[in-house]
Image (cartoon, rainbow, N blue to C red; front, side, top):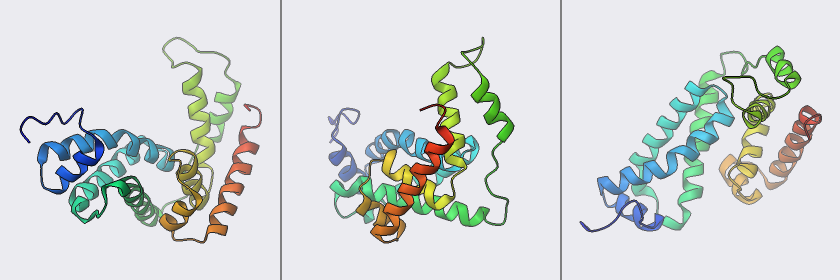
Length: 189
């Protein structure tokens, strides 16, 4: 496929070529998915360096295991499984450490700010930071399900499969996460 335009190629074709060992297709696949994976981890892990490390780890697993994917139409759920298990492995490694630390004073300082100061990002960046702090304050089991639902747009059934929990538990955790987030963000919504 020397004339194939990898940048414009359909995702299914890129995936199939990657499975066949096409290095250029694999590079294009990584380029297409890395931003979303990093975004997911940045909401899960909180620290930029941890998110970057987790992204690298998930991308390596994806490259190593791409040939195990049976149906290219299932790529998104297969990739979400890799992201989820990578994050669970990370939380197990961090279990000995303290819970994810967020600075309550900094959160209050952000809430008090009105407008942008020179050199800072504008309001959207501040809102994003406040939402990140709110998400990081959730327990891991609530954070992962709410992000899979709201950020990745997965169905309750898919989340149930990915997290190895019952459908009722997933629904309950998502409801609890939404309530906790609403409480923390009530002055902004």
